Image (cartoon, rainbow, N blue to C red; front, side, top):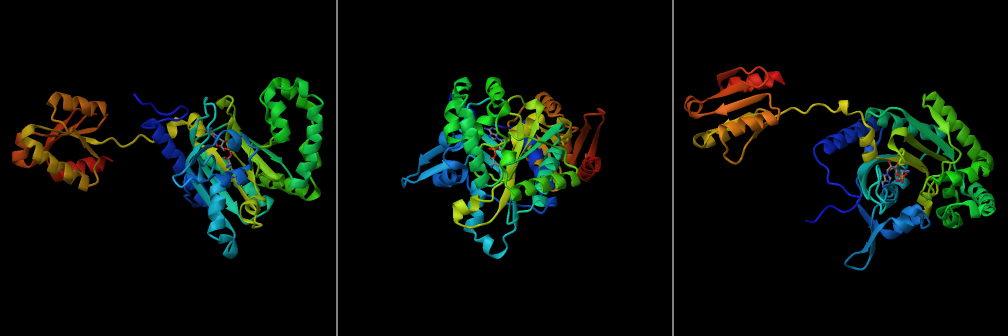
Length: 414
Ligand code: HAM
C-alpha cells in the first residue's frame, strides 16, 4: 500500500475541528487589529528564498523541497510565508500609493527536517506581515496580537521572549567578536557548532547541547553592541509592551533561524511542547524589501505553527457539533424518503441517512452511533399518510407527525 510521505500527515475528524478553530481564532483576532487576508502560491522561484531567507540558513541550505519545472526553472515549495508575501507586496507596487499594508495568511509550508513531536515536513502556519511602518509601538502591538491569538485559540502558560538584533553594522561588529570567542573554545563544542559558526555564528547560541551552552555562558552579548538608535528602539519597545500589559522576558540569546531579521525579534514558547517549544515566532525585517525589490520599506511579522497550537490547545473550547437527524427508510419508501430528506434540508436541517439499503435494525444502530438526537422513520404507513415518525433518542419518545410539525419540532430544539 502506498503511504503518506514521512513527516506528513492526513488530517481528518478531530484534527480538522482543531485546525478550523485555530483559523477562526486567527481571523477574529487579526481582523480586530485591521489585518486582511492574503493568499499567495505554495510554490515560488527558488531564488526568492535563497535571497530572502538567506543561503546560509538551515532552511535554505538543507531543508527545501526544490525541483525543476517542465521548462527547467528551479521552483521551491515554500518553507515559510514571509518571502512570498513580500514578493506579492512588491509585485503589486503597493509601496507607491499606500505603503501601510497589514496582511494575514495561513496554509501549508514544507521543510525537509527530521520529524519529531511538533516538527513535520509538511506543516501549517498562520502568519501576519505589516509593511510601511517602523515604530516600536507597531512591534509591541503585533506581539500583543500574537498573544491574543494564542489565548483565543485556548493556550495558556506561555512565555514571550524578546531581543534586539540591532542593525546590520552592529550585528557585523558583534559577529566578529563572537567568532573570536568561539574559536578559542572550538575543541569543546559539538560538531554542529563547529561547522555552523563559520557561516552563521549567531545560530550557535541556539544550540541545544548543554556542554555547548556551558561554553557560551560568558559569550559576548549582542545587546552591548547595539548602536544608539537600535538601543533606544528596543527600550521603547519594552515600554510599549508594558503599556499593553504584555508579560515578556528578555532573552539576549534569541537570534532566530532566518537571515532577514533586524532589531526586534520575539518568540512565544510553551513548556509543554518538549524540544520544539516555540509556538509563534517573528520579528522586524527592515532590509528584506530592499534585498528582494530594491525598495526601502520596513516590515514586521510573525508566524505560528498550527500543529503546535493543536498540541497545546484546550479541547473543551471546541463546540460540540450539531448532530444530524437520521432518516430511516425501507425499500418501498425510498422515493418518499428522498423527497422528505430534500424538504428537511431545504428547511435548514442537517440530515444523514444510509445510501445502501440496510435493515431497520442496522439503520437504527447507525443513528445511535452518530449520536443523533432525532431519528425520522419513514415506513409505508407514513408514506400513505404523508407523515413521519419522529423519535427522540434522548427521551425515547416517538410520535407520528405531519412533516411541517417535524420541521418545527427539530428546528425549535436547535
Ligand atoms: P519560523 O520560526 O521558521 O519563522 O517558523 C514559525 C513557526 O512555524 C514556528 O515557531 C513553529 O511553530 C512553526 N514551524 C516551523 N517549522 C516547523 C515544522 N517543521 N513543523 C511544525 N511547525 C513548524 C518563520 O517561518 C517566519 N516566516 C516568521 C515570520 C513572519 N517572521 C516575520 N514574519
